[in-house]
Length: 92
Length: 141
Image (cartoon, rainbow over all chains, first blue to last red; front, side, top):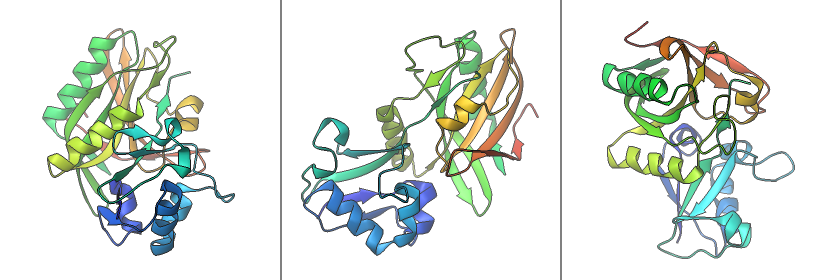
């Protein structure tokens, strides 16, 4: 089973776990399994329309899924899925 | 509330002063105990913004992935992001808000004429429409 690493601030919505093993052959399936098991995570990761929030990036091992096959990116046992925020800003 | 220990605070201020007049950015690692966050390690990261870095910063996601891994390796948590505002106050701008993430504390360091002046910590909301001021303690406070 692939493993999803849970960022610290989201662990309160995942029974305080720092990682969760999930069933799923793709990133989309794995994230769906995660939010089914831990429904409170859903609003943190997805908009009401079911799209990943603009500040959420997903990596499989060291690769950003935007440069792979997005939510259809294949995953298998031994793969690690990371949830990484997009952050920028500036004084003006 | 968030407290920054002396060593990481020095790293943050040094990074902000060294990159002046450009904005700097980095990650804050530490621990969370109830409502109290303690920053024990600061990681200066590259400002990846391709433009005028005097008024903008951008973190590469892969650098945040590195920070997250460093935190796990050291038994700590990634708890916040810091950046500087050269010759501006430590407010949370519209640009900061629209490009933030509600999971973390955002410390802004005001650098005036190349020297640290003051800092504030901010907690943006999920919709990226407003940020609440968070109580901040640090060695220069």
